[in-house]
Image 1 (spheres, rainbow, N blue to C red):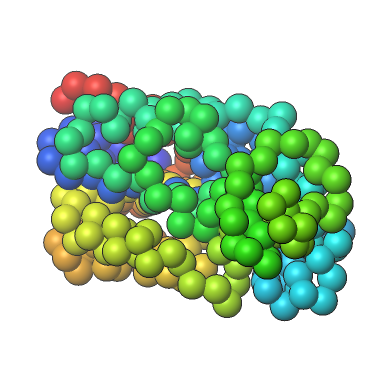
Image 2 (cartoon, helix red, strand yellow):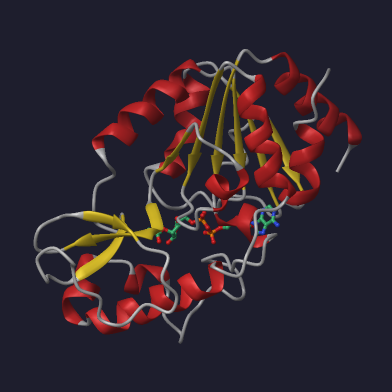
Length: 244
Ligand code: OAD
């Protein structure tokens, strides 16, 4: 990758007044969390689209819970990396900043990010299928199947599954931030799952400068202003270094 591209991206970010960052599984891959569509993305030969659905949970809640339980155990052993930390540090330097993450692993929060929308939810939050109560739960391993302490109903991960809608509050916040930002930085997402896959073009149409950082090309690579190739943990700290 040419050093000029990296320098262009750095100076755009350094002079931006409003920055929005969108992240996907690639940023946590550098912490050892498997991505969904990478080589190690399958669990017992299932794709995420086969398990992360209300229909799959209705059909076989134990199977879906076994998958989430396996992921909770794995994520519990992982730490945020330099990319998560550089984004958390940026939040305190930029007035108009927002982080949109598709990741449910909680590693952005663990790194100190507070101005964020976890648009697909968080794996450490559970929701009762009977009374809708949402609770934090860090227990690992989780007894399967878990029940609601309040009403005894079956608990499910508080995650937005395929076929479900994002929270209204998150959609509004994302739309506003995508409209208002000078720069959108898109890190480590394959750009195939909507609505997040449409965020780069929304920001672009609203006039933002869009920077993509990914190991590989994505369906959005042609519409962005700069596509950087490399690992998040190496490039994000360089991109977001304080100072011009
Ligand atoms: P994917 O697994 O689809 O894509 C991960 C992306 O990260 C790919 O484009 C990789 O090239 C890139 N990548 C991998 N390692 C990287 C690294 N070290 N540095 C930079 N880039 C790297 O994950 P998402 O795009 O996040 O939803 O997937 C979107 C959604 O689909 C997920 O939130 C999840 C999934 O099914 C639900 O489960 C509801």
